[in-house]
Image 1 (cartoon, helix red, strand yellow):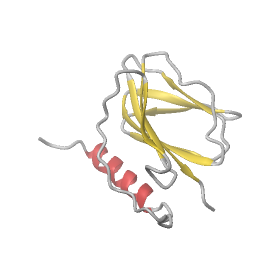
Image 2 (cartoon, rainbow, N blue to C red; image 1 turned 60 degrees about the vertical axis):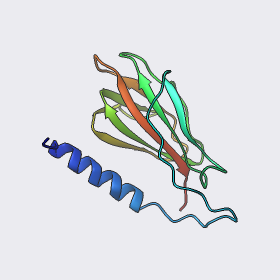
Image 3 (cartoon, one colour; image 1 turned 45 degrees about the horizontal axis):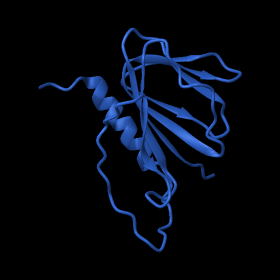
Image 4 (tube, rainbow, N blue to C red; image 1 turned 30 degrees about the vertical axis):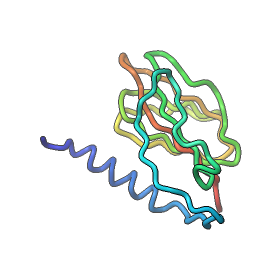
Length: 136
């Protein structure tokens, strides 16, 4: 099976993004590596729930039907990344023009940014969000 070259670039970008994250000091209890299946009977399923499971990172798997949106929100002082697995949509950022995207893609949302994600395609939009405390 031949891998689509876009996936190679996507995987490289995702690896670079995580490599650039600052190291978090260990707490008194070491955390364990996890492998979590992307199974979600509903539209939004948490994967990582923050402390004590992680050092503060949260994530989840989202599936949006055509025309659906997650709703306007902010992640407060946290930064957010979306790893788009399937479909197409647009990131609506308060005060800016919409930012269209098609899978595979990675989106970055800075802290305190009010935003919404909408499925603009004819099929499902599937992505994993990752929210982590921002550090300057």
